[in-house]
Image 1 (tube, helix red, strand yellow):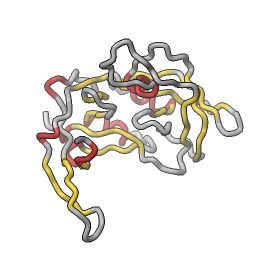
Image 2 (image 1 turned 180 degrees about the vertical axis):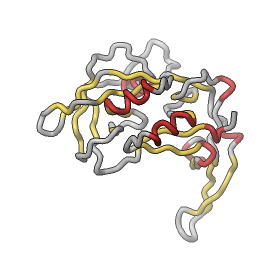
Image 3 (image 1 turned 135 degrees about the horizontal axis):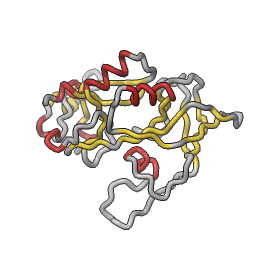
Length: 206
């Protein structure tokens, strides 16, 4: 399969959208010192719920608009609406699950209708060696900055799910089918970018 058949999944990071922050989560000290993710937030993203108490509390930080995805101040950790959950279920999309949350606004009132999103699908490592190398100037007359164009994921080790993360990353990747379902149902505050068009500053990976 070609990377053009896949998309990165995230939010639009709109300042008007309600953003919440988790309360009471902690750094996680695993028995295995080689375990990559040391924080409960990362473990929630990956669907590892060991020793986490539910519902996870999230409190309003800023913004007011309720949309189908809410940011949490922690990259790749999102809350999704009842509507989005039902659409994912009705279309039999795989590689995800939800966890119980309690969302509290600044007045202490509960906001109903949201769930935490975990990504359980997996694929192999990202291979930046397959990316096209391009150069850009970020400011006029500034130095050229190297970028990798195209996110090449380990599809040989992909488990075939619709939502999945490359090995040792918190990226959320989705299939073309997911992208079509999300667009068709006009779900809000979702950002999809084709993997072939993604550009990543080399300093972020080297």
